[in-house]
Image (cartoon, rainbow, N blue to C red; front, side):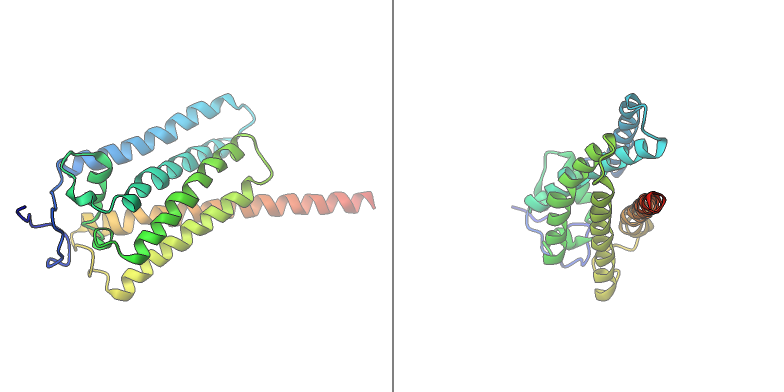
Length: 222
């Protein structure tokens, strides 16, 4: 089998059987972000049936459904499919990872930290994200604890992801072009720092409010 030169760094990285992207990067990004937006929009529409939910709760349901799908399906694929870069069918999941690997070649080399981190993200945080959607829809008492748990896990994994790359050299595995470094490596991953942080603040405020009200109620009874 002829070896096709890959677009990843380091350039001397050996990836036998590599097949270039079948789809253009515009198509890949369009499908990814378009489908993500569609999931959030559909959840916002569906949750309109739950008249007691606030706008924030409806947006939270959309976020947790979207992030659950990304974790379980997209990130789960790169965990179980170690030869995604050899795919020649144009399968969108493999195309997404062949494109993202331009920002981090550790996925192709099956870096121990990357794959174990993604395994936890896919098969622990993914299913728990779907459970949180149920918790939000029915306003269960445990939804805040679950959101804090998963958000902290996402935040911790993302911070370690950045720090391990910084420790070894930010461009050791990532191409320098703005799209790949600032768009994919920095920008795409920053979403899982920003939104989980906002979720944690939201949960803490609600838990503190509930505890304060309970304490006030007990004092009134006394």
